[in-house]
Image (tube, rainbow, N blue to C red):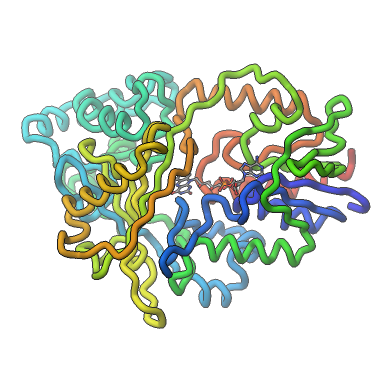
Length: 458
Ligand SMILES: Cc1cc2nc3c(=O)[nH]c(=O)nc-3n(C[C@H](O)[C@H](O)[C@H](O)COP(=O)(O)OP(=O)(O)OC[C@H]3O[C@@H](n4cnc5c(N)ncnc54)[C@H](O)[C@@H]3O)c2cc1C
């Protein structure tokens, strides 16, 4: 598209992909990133010589050849640069014990009488009802009252601190707890042939029912940041101008058409099209539009990074989940179990993620100490394994509390964006309900294919 300028706001993996694709169609593409480095939640950082990730670790092959080529290179490059996992090895800690073969909470960890009552209710439950809007009622009709009360209520209270009745059923997908472990492995396999039980019972092992598209992680202890760095380089090579440590303060509108954006350094960028991969609220604010919906609520996200002197007690799982409500730890990533790089000195480092309220910012040191206690108590690391380095990072209010109201407001916000801007296209988590990296990347790829072509005709 000759003489057209496109601005992409947000330099996470979604913004990088959008900018790379836009560069094939627009004369000039400018990417605006608020932080010093691009990559967002798919970035890594070095601390005391070891690499740690910011939050998300495992994208998977998308099965769209062109997109996979952009994201991972040719088939040879993919094999050379990335580890491939047909499934991720995971375990979970719940009610004071480990389930060694699945990330799903196990009903078998409940006291005997509670378990027995729960199983009767689960088998007799009517089954999941997709049109049920009250989440608590949805859970009861899927799993029965006992498992709802003894498993879902406390786990979701720990993670989101919100009334069950207000949540949207998508929270189950976001945390990967759509099903529970119950009965025996063999009985479960038999029952799963009946749709009602397939909806609520999970395979006992992560090796069963695994996805067919492999997960990827950079080889050589490079951290997931290597992946977004590769796309960053490609984006630069494609001619995109990347402005870091910059954000949009003002949007200049002519009716509904964005003419230019003003950055925090006072510079103005004239533009024909804007791709917006950050919160839609910020676009409306920058244009001085009164926001008609209630601001979304988020949980804060704290990362506790540790390096230990020697190996962990858990030698195989790549990540662990802690559903135990007595503990604040949520997800634990064990880097040496993802990539065993013989060419480098073996490091024994891990990251524990904690979801909590915003007061976490002032309690960071306490959180770090509590989490260290927990990983020893859970026997992930032995008491005599010395801490070589530790670091706590408060990532702000970043984890959406997916209530019915949240989703409703997101739709209202999207409508307001469409009503106020004719040349702004939303991408990423704020654009309409997707959360996982792969869904967002595929959505971005599809939007860039079609919207840019439409745009030429305007
Ligand atoms: C705690 C947590 C855990 C998650 N775990 C998983 C998981 O296990 N699996 C999975 O598939 N997905 C997971 N997700 C979702 C996943 O992280 C997102 O799908 C992915 O990060 C989306 O990339 P993005 O580029 O849209 O956003 P981000 O990675 O958030 O990037 C946004 C970028 O925009 C920049 N920015 C922010 N404000 C401005 C501004 N005003 N101006 C300019 N730039 C700005 C930021 O600095 C950042 O670089 C998780 C999300 C969170 C919050």
